[in-house]
Length: 180
Ligand SMILES: CC(C)(COP(=O)(O)OP(=O)(O)OC[C@H]1O[C@@H](n2cnc3c(N)ncnc32)[C@H](O)[C@@H]1OP(=O)(O)O)[C@@H](O)C(=O)NCCC(=O)NCCS
Image (tube, rainbow, N blue to C red):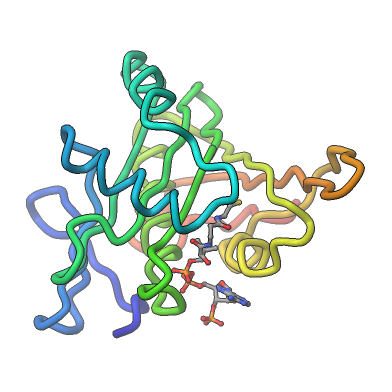
């Protein structure tokens, strides 16, 4: 299954149409079971994952916090994206996909939906930090059009600060100004 041909469902949720056996859905995090799913993905994805308490504190600020989950037929939470919307900027804090679901286009599909939702709420720029050593994530972001704008120095693992100019489009990719 590849997430190469997404389309917008009429109900406002995003469903991958290509393979009816493997529908994929992106939606805002709902309740404790979703949070369990997010922390489970984190535990197998990051050396120092956010704790549940950190997410709960984050969710106490619903005007800013945006957490989206991606669901597959097999996994209610196959991955997630946690971000802060500080219009006009969307700052992405975490993105992760379950190891057994990687390299199927899920993170790309998820981030495209998250960026679309941010644009709809007034964002014109998306930012995030990625470790220079994280080649998978760097390739993911570069593929979406993010460009390196700076480096945060760290002794062992410098981070790149990357950003993306956002603009709405009529149904296609909206990253026309990426790289300027
Ligand atoms: C980074 C991560 C979210 C990517 O998720 P994913 O669903 O596998 O990503 P996609 O399938 O959408 O991949 C999109 C592109 O990213 C690049 N990419 C993804 N994983 C890669 C890997 N292991 N090695 C090299 N490139 C990779 C490829 O260019 C890929 O396109 P392709 O498959 O057509 O070659 C996932 O590997 C992950 O959860 N990693 C651990 C958590 C993490 O590091 N998060 C990022 C923090 S900044």
